[in-house]
Length: 353
Image 1 (cartoon, rainbow, N blue to C red):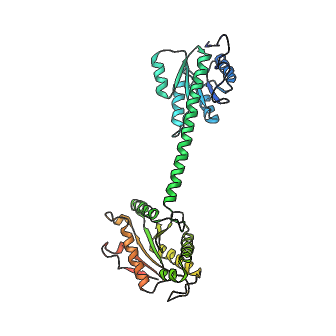
Image 2 (tube, rainbow, N blue to C red):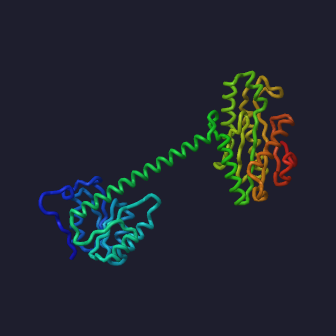
Image 3 (tube, one colour):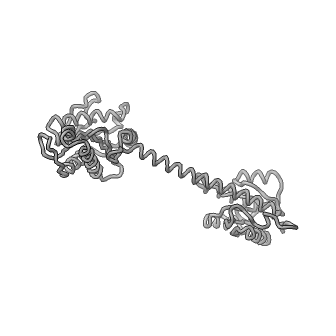
């Protein structure tokens, strides 16, 4: 029968249970009833909650059910032995997760110790176990687990802060939608994805008509307010989470539409144009209309058909169609099918509406 030795004499820090992380759950996987009972009594003195299992299978079930802070694991068990239990625990842990495992063994040969550590154990105690040594090792493992948890929490907070900072650096300070940097990253990412998946990609370039005249007559504060409203209207006209509206610069906006063919792009472009026109923002200085309007140019391409063409070449096509929309009288949509024209000729094969 395996035994555990009690400390003699004056109570020590270990015997009084002053652990740095009290009231923690400790899973004891031990098939010898007497040893398990003694371990449980000692753990209670340390203000830890013992969880008992008398086989490897029950130990694994208890581990996944209760998520203990430390595992005390006998090497020799009925059914699944302690080595395999440790291996399965380690295989189940996700990145950043770690539960200390201390092996309990009557075997002192180096081969058994090496096998246990190789399987995922962190330390070992040779039976009969000294209570003082048990308490000291538990205290050390709980400190390490506590430090590891703090490090993991700090890492997660740092990741969240970095993600927030990244989002902020990709947002336009005036309108709150994506800025040029966010647009460039999105276009490059979607170009690569659509090329890989052999799907179409549409890009819309949008310009607020006669905006300089609006600024000159109404003032820059009114111009900024108008840009905010137009940006919100453009973004609100998009219905899929993968679509993105961005401020390209000044009074010019861009919309990235992954997996969108020619007819779909024209439908979305018309919806954006109509929604802005419905705002009926007064534009006293506009020569062709009394309200703020936009011109939309767009291009649709299958990136897989242009293996050597960079993503920003799609901007050239969209810019060319935007120029045509403005030249044709503004407040209209002009699109082109980039698949049907050579890369050197972005100004042909257009359809207006």
